[in-house]
Image (tube, rainbow, N blue to C red; front, side, top):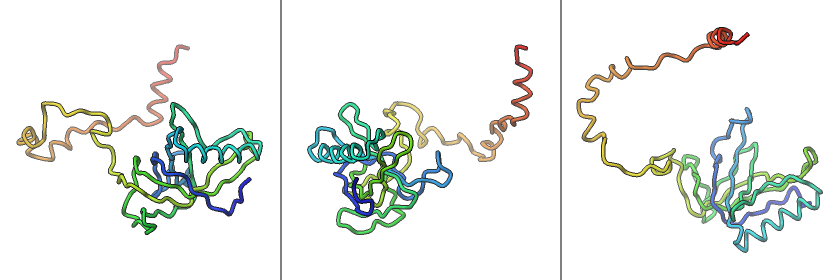
Length: 193
């Protein structure tokens, strides 16, 4: 197995599921900083990188891999409990207010770690990211969701006079969701026995 104190660098790939500035707490209350790197499985640098990962997995006699390979796209997962360093293409620190988004071209600095539980394998501890081509995170847009431009409603023309008094909007709020007790009572009434 590779030296756990040595830092390795991935080839350039496309960043997906980017959590570099704030930890993702969806599945872990303490949160994980993470990024998934997409590589073209036919790329020569990607082939060398995947061969290295496979050799480490074989060496530790593991069955769990930090990557998947489907339809010509390799997705490699990196994560850490600590925020990674984030650099630009010229090795300068990128300010924290710049939020790296999915679609950015990046290289990832990582440390491999082997584990024996659950069949054994390796995981890749995220150390840093070098951003080669930035796509800043800005939330979801209509384009990213797949909407085409259509004829019809647009705020510039259709909103004039629509809500002259903003308080009207607050009068039309949906009722609060039912409490757990209300749901249980309703479920008890609908039981077939």
